[in-house]
Structures are given as structure tokens and as C-alpha cells.
Image (cartoon, rainbow over all chains, first blue to last red; front, side, top):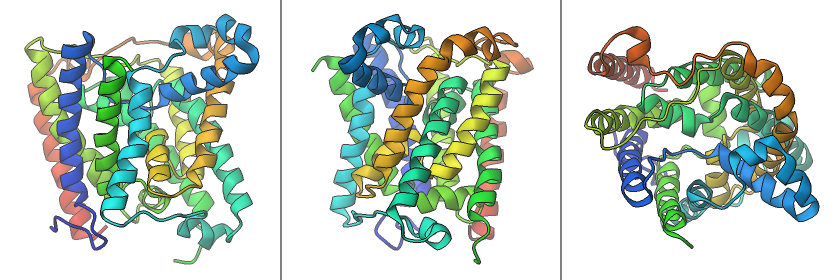
Length: 180
Length: 176
């Protein structure tokens, strides 16, 4: 087992184990500093972002919507965490020179060609479906996959099986046809 | 910014840093995992779970932190989980990694992010309907495996460790 990948990244075992330590440190820090244990997650922030954007055109509608009321539209701990992910990935990729401007990923290109438009539609439509699913299931691979599994939550185990089970099936249909 | 926002930002920077160093942000890694050709994401996630669960179960055992299970609402988790899996396979990112991918220059993640914000807005509109239908089917509430299975968490933890380490050996043997 190597500690570094060919392109200067870290072994996924090492980076993952460090993320495990970060998850522990994070629940401790939120409990101690904020008075409430918070677990790593990402998808609720997309609801808050949608609420903040909708507030600029239809403030009354956001106030009257039960889901926005339940979620509380505001820039909170998790919102800043999600913004931090962009920064952290930027710092890391700049440091080891793996930062690349990419408009169409290689696997997509092999299957659907170099069109940015096609990729944009795929990402957009996939994004809508995935987020409706994540909000219905009440979590994504961060909230369910990492945080929920670490707590031995029943719902997270079932959600993770569904994420990967259906994901494997749909990926096979969408990308499986290319000659490998 | 308040303490919560600062703490979130610092935690997020470290989170993004590790996601990028683990090379799990890329579209090709995500689709590679779903096509069962490249197990990088599984190695990363399962390593994090192995380490994290020890600390979190210990801290909650001593009452230092509180666990926060998400509800085991059958319709929500099954249908939501399936929709997420399908959308994930098409988009090639999950919510957290889409932001990280943007940070490492894969700017097509922007379309995924816009799609997910739109999806969240759609969900907010669907919520009253779902609350009266899917969400009412069967809710087991916020349950954990120990009380559900009637087994101590200290018995479940080693089972996970053995299972995950066996998977790692399989991945390495098959060079995935």
C-alpha cells in the first residue's frame, strides 16, 4: 500500500482515516463551542441556498413555505462548512498542482462526446433528481454515509444501500455501454 | 461572522482539503465507483467511517456528545435513497463533492450545483404533498442499530471493522 498516489494525492485510506478524526473533532467542537452536537453534512445547505435566492424575488412565499420554515433559511454552521469545502479543495489542489480547469470530464466525453451543453443538461437534471432524493431521505453521502454510519443509524444504513444500489444500476445504464 | 460560522468554515476547509487529497472529488472517481471499476471512494468513505465511529460511539457513551439519528421513515428513505442514487449516477457528484470539484477547477460542477439548488426549491414545493402521503406510510423514528438489533454497540463495531477490512483486502487483491 502506497501513502501517495501517482499524481501527488494521498492514499484514500489515509485521507479517509484523517476525515474520521476530523468528524470526531468536529462533533466535539460543535458540542463545546456551540452547545449543540452537529454532524458533518451538506445537503440541507442547498435548501437554505434555494430559500435565500427565493427570498430576493418572493419573500412572502419563502415565509409561508412549511419546508423553508422547518429548515430555517439562514447562513449557519453547515452553510459555511459547505463554502469551506470549495476553499479547502482549492488550497489542496493548488498546493499539489492537481488543479485543472475541466469543462467535460473524460468518462462523460467517452460516452456522450465533448459537448459542454450536453454535460450541463446531464449535471443539471441529475442534480434536481439527486437533491429531491437527498431531502426526502433526509441526508446525502455526507449526512447519511459518513455521519449516520458513524452513529450506527438504521436509516443511514438503508439509505446508503439505496444510494449505491440504485447508483450502480443507473450508472451501468448511462455509462456502461462504452467500450472499455 | 459568528462562532458557528467560523467553526463551520474552518471545518469545511479541512473537509475539502481531505476530500481533494483523497482524490474523491472527480466525476471519473464517482462514476468509476458506481461502475465498480475504481474503489477509491469506497476506501475513503469506509476508512472515515471506521475511525469516526470509534470516537463518536465513545464520546456518546460517556455522555460528552449526543447522537442524532435521522428518522427511519420507510417511504422517505427508500424512495429518497433511490432518487438520490439515480441522480448521483447521472450527475457524477454528490452534494459535498460538487463543491469540492468546483474548488479544484472542475467548473462543470456548477451545473450540478445549480441543479441541486433547483431540486431543493422543488422539494420545498413538494413538501406539503409528501408530508401528507409518502412521509405518513411508516416511520420507525430516530433509531440506532444497537437498540433495534438488541446488541451492544461494542459488539456491532468490531463486526463493521472486520467487514470493512475484508472489503479492503478484496479491493487490493483485485486492484480496484
